Length: 607
Image (cartoon, rainbow, N blue to C red; front, side, top):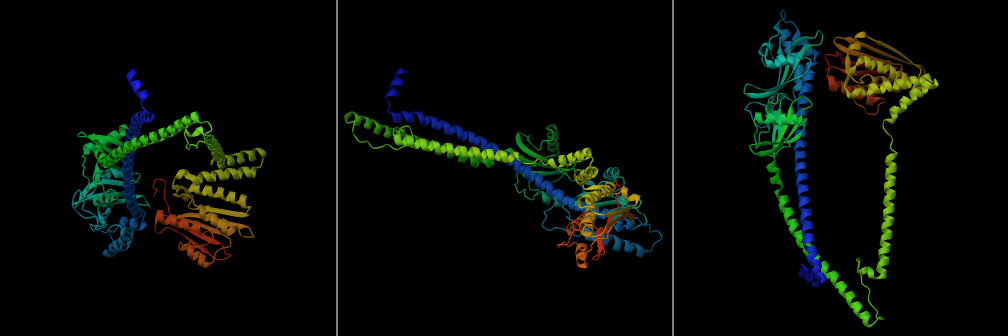
C-alpha cells in the first residue's frame, strides 16, 4: 500500500488528473445515461398507455356520437303525433283509401325525411367480421293494432317479437330507450335502438319502434384512427358480451379473457388502464364506459410490442453512452494538459523571480484558481459576482410581483357572498325593497343554473318569470302591468330549461322599456290537441315587417333581441323538431305577440 502511495505521489499532475477523473467521469456518464434511459422507457410506456386510452375514449365518443344521431331520429319518430294517430286508428270500417293515406301521407312522408340520410348503404364499408349481409339501416314499427295492415317492411306485426326476452325487459321500463345487443336477422348482424311507441293523448301503447343498425357500421367506426394491427378493440354490451370488434386485430381474446379483465377492473375500483397476463404473455388493457348506451369499450395491447417499438431507443442510448464516454475521456485528457501547462508557466515564473525579482512577467489569463493569482482577474470576478447579485435581486423582485398579482385575484364566490350580504344588511337596515330584490335575484340564479339539467318543470319556470319581472321593475324602475293567464294543467308539464324567459326578457327590454308610457305584458298558457301553447304579448315599440320575417325564418342579422329569439327557435327545433316552433307577429308602435308551440310533456314522459 505504501508503495502504491509513493508511486502515485511521484506521478505528474497531468497523469494524476487523468487517472482520477477518467473512471469517475465514465461511471457518472453510465449512471446518468442508464437512469435517463430507464426514465425515458417508463415515460414512453406511460405515453403509449395514455395514447391507447385516448384512442379508446375517442373511438367510444365516435360510436356514441353516431348512436346519438340514431337516438335523435328515434326520438323524432317517437314524438310524432302524426305517426301515433296513423298507427293507433281503428280501420275496421275504413276502406283501402284510408289505409293508403295512412301509409303514404302519414307514415312514409313523416319517417323518410327523418332517416333518409341514414338508411342508404355506404359502399366503402368493409364486410362484417361476424358474417355477410347488408349495411342498410332498418327502421321498423311493430304494431299491435289488428285493424291496421302490415306491409312487412316499415310496419310489422307485434306478434313477431311478443314474449321475447329483450321485449319483456324493455316493457319493464317502457319510458326509456332500450339498446338491444347483437342479434342476427336475414344473415346480417345488428344491434338496435328500441322504444315503446305511445299515444301521447291517452298514453296507450301502440307497439315498438326499432332502428336496426348493422354491426358492419360499428366495426367501420372502430377501425378509424386505430390502424395498428397489434391493437385489439372490443365493444361490449352491459352484460360484458362482445357486440363488435376491430376486424384486423392480430390478437384475439375470448369471452373468458374479457370477463377476467372486467373482473380485474372491478377489483381495482374501476381503474381504466391495467395489466393482464394470458399464456405467459403480458398485455395492457384500457376500459372506457359509454355515457350514452351504458355499453363499454375495451382495448388490449401486448407489452412486448411496446418494447419492440422501443428497441431503436435502446440502440440510440447505447451509442450515445459510448460516444459520451469517449468524448469525456478526451476532454479529461485535454483539460489535464491545459491545466498542467499553465502550472508549468507559473513554476517557470517562480524560477525567474528567484533569479531576478524585477523581471516583467506577462499576465496569465483564465477563470479558474490559477488565473485568480492575477489581481485584475480577482477584480473581474468581483464584477461578475456583483452582476450576479444584481440579477438575483431583479428575479426576487419579479417573483414578489407575481405573488402579489396572484394574491389580488378575486374569488369567484365573492358574487354570491356579496348578494347574501346585501340581502342580510338591507333586511337589517329596514330597506325592504333591496332585501326583496336581492332574494329574488338569488332565487333567479338558482333556477338559472338548474344543477346543469336540460329539462325543468314549467311551474318553476313561471315562478322564475315572476321573480325575474320583479327584478326588472326594480332595476329599470319600470311601470309595468303583468297579467298571467295560464291553465292549471300547464303547471304539471315539463319543458326545456329557460325556454320562456328569453321571450319575456325581449318583450320587456326591447319592447316595453323604450316606451314613454306604462307597459302592459300578458302571458297566456294552454294545452290544445296534445301541444302546449304560450302567448307573450306586449304593448311595446314593435318591429318592422322585415325584422319580423327575418326572426321567424331564423335569420339573426342585427335585429334587437334577435339572438335570444333565434336561440329559443334553435333549441325547440333541436329537441322537439316539427311542428314545434316560435312565431312572432308585430308592427311598429303596435306591440309584439310571440307564440311558442311545444310538446305537452308530463314528468313521467320526458323526451
